[in-house]
Amino acid sequence: MAGALVLLKVIDTDGDTRLSLAHSDGLGWIERAGMLRVAETIETGAAWQSAGDG
Image 1 (cartoon, rainbow, N blue to C red):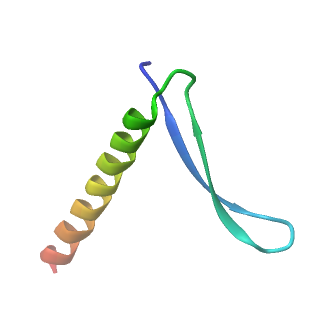
Image 2 (cartoon, one colour):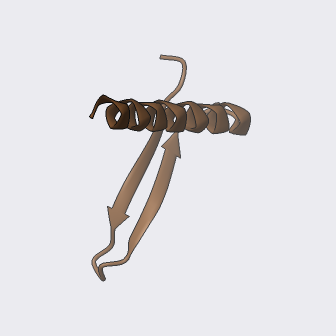
């Protein structure tokens, strides 16, 4: 494995919602930013493709 990036939706005990991010040691900020951007593009592309199917 070259690196991992995990984005979590966390609901605290008081009901507040937040995002938390964890990543592999040694994964630089530019790599993390790129991985997040690619994930966003994949998700957005999938949404646009699904919208076009109907």
